[in-house]
Image 1 (cartoon, rainbow, N blue to C red):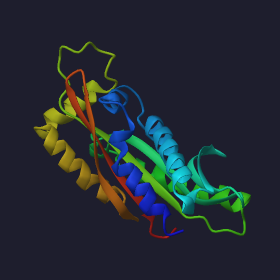
Image 2 (cartoon, helix red, strand yellow):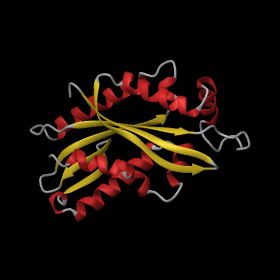
Image 3 (cartoon, rainbow, N blue to C red):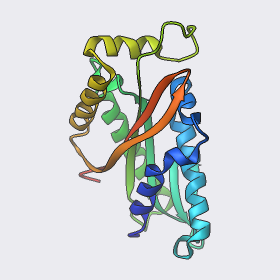
Length: 212
């Protein structure tokens, strides 16, 4: 299915246009952004499948047997590709135990492969991992506690590294080190807008394990 990755990459690249102005910034700073992004990706993919004739027999399905997102060929009921998503903040790869994200990704991959083998034993389904990291400017002290979920951690990391830009650069380097067993198929960032005058972007990486 040569169209799958280009199609998925395009939807990630255009993710900012899937939300109202500043909506994604709100989600990114106040909740686990994985779910809003996954749900919007699924909706956008299904819109695309309905328009483009070569893909109209596919559907994007959330939580298919507890897998994050799959693309299914409806006539055959076969899953053509699976995507396992993880989300966090740019301070996460800079903590003392950053490799947990790569370990979680590997665990998700193992579970997904097992489920696909169980449900469709005669079809080898590719599985991809997607990592989203919320990155923001420093959180102003006048924002009341409890509104921005991880304000203390965000500001602590900015203080430790000297600036938000240095945090972002260091996080990008750390992610590539963490995921050294994976091939990077695509990466970039999405401008999420601002929330309470805090500028936000969401960094993303699309991986495939070298041995998968």
